[in-house]
Amino acid sequence: METIDADWIRKRLSGKRGEKSALATALGVGPDVVSKILKGERSVHASEIPKVIEFFASQDTRRESARLRLLQEIQTLDEQEARFLLGSLGVYRGQRREEEP
Image (tube, rainbow, N blue to C red):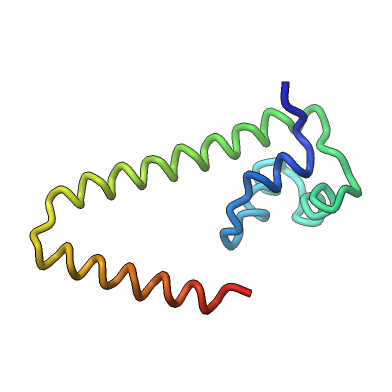
């Protein structure tokens, strides 16, 4: 059985903006509590463990759902649309790399 602790949570965080705040909301605590958990200043309470697991399970489901929809849409693209999408993706990734610390 896995231990649900700061390391477990950190491994599953994507770094997406607002994610820690969303986790706090799911747990019914303030963002400062999530920060304390991640710093090791507070442990995850037993009553919070199911909420933490559900939060990350729903994140994975949404991520997979988006990927599936994208794959389905890709199948319908003509050559020009596919090239446009590839170009847009390249620009987006370039911008994202520039924004990363």
